[in-house]
Length: 164
Image (cartoon, rainbow, N blue to C red):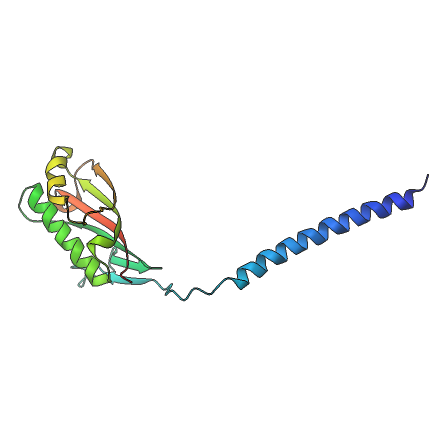
């Protein structure tokens, strides 16, 4: 029985598999290198939270921009008023932060609404409706156990695309 032909055949198969694997790996890297370079600003920019100027070490940023998006921290309203007043003031504050960061209400992609009391849902919706244009963003609304920090009746945060 001639084992040399059988061993050569195995080596040939192994070499072919190894060469194919290397070619595939090289192709992946070649494609990655050949892709057009993305000139987007990928830096991360943080804006201080409103009223955080006196804090030695702030707890959070008011907004963060990165890779064409702006993330706005939750906004609440900490004065007297009903849910309509609170929602209106929070949305005004959100709009101000968006504009300061280089975006706008019609560029918002995702909104999170936190209610101190789920019974305020319908009235919050009345104040909310139309504030983001004809095509509103996706939204999650939850009632928080124990209330919203700072005695606000509502807190809202969002993610938006930066203006082009």
